[in-house]
Length: 521
Image (cartoon, rainbow, N blue to C red; front, side, top):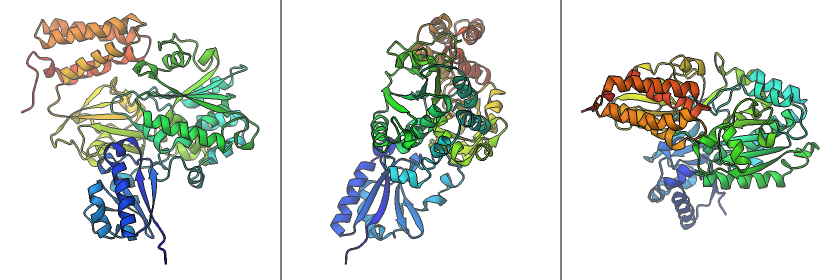
């Protein structure tokens, strides 16, 4: 009598593949065939627990059991322990029930609920796990009601600016035009961030659903996804998802048979950081060199090809289906103050358990870094943390009790940005980090405004003179003046915020700007 196949789940996401997931998949299939123990292997997205990747999960009557990190060489021993029969829980790599993993148990996963759960290109699995509920609800509403739901949810842009999504949508809705657009900014370029990529590789239909809802809400029939060029796997996955959505009648002239049209075109970026800024992105989409535009007019009034355009980040749009499906009140029930819903924190740098943690606003940075992240990978004390990407201010270890909240961080002259958190131990040279911030701005500046183009280059030179012991007090004063000029005079956030990490390093770690920089023993 033939035995029913045991279902295994293994990520096909880029990080897991880089850590050996494809070799594990081959070993699993070969070993099961050799032993006559049939398995069904489902390749999923990643749950974002990178220190456990490749994370193998096995369906059992008691739920999914986790094993990790698994390498191909571990597979025979796992089968010896009974993996093929759903046993093997005594093996050294056995982690217990997936739902009880400490790193998952304390999360509130809304946007990333399906990542790691299903085959990201399986439309039936998407629908079976709540997919299209938000879109179906939206199809029964007037545009104004959809915009009101997003406004009432308190959703703010997850790309960095944290601008209320509902206000942006309402402006676009109220601007009359024969053609409008929805643009998804997937040019995820901040150091230490990867949430957009994880979502696109792990649950692309959620982004498609969110973009369709945005189009229905503001009266747009065409959407564009501007994807970072360094994400080839995300590009392949999303292109496949678009084809599947077309074939299923989700995209096209009649969205799910509603008679309402919406389509999406996928465009690959050209590798420029500045194209993560929304107006530069629009220029790039139009086939021009990516340069910052003057505002006004706002893109919601005159954006892509001069038409009203809603431009949102991946995670902003992917949050929308949940809001329409379960209601604005449910979404707004998470978080604190004006920061409502959940935020995907991406923990990177010198940290023991790096990865993605989706939580409600309000958790402290210390809890994220020390309790969940396990402290530094080196085992040395945390000295500095940069939140919000390369333009975010640095914080000292004694400031980590601040809650993850837009306003609380802004009160400390810091920002949450896209949710990237990069950890440094006590060997970091903060003078060098300040120099990096200016050098990064000089390299990535689009060149349109003088404070950014020239100021960042002069900033590098001034920091070099300070660290060389050349009139340090005079040059520190000059550097602060230069930072003020860039903040006040730059056209966009690149030049306007590059001084933030420089100022914070000067204020919090002045000893590292001495001629002989501080070095830990």
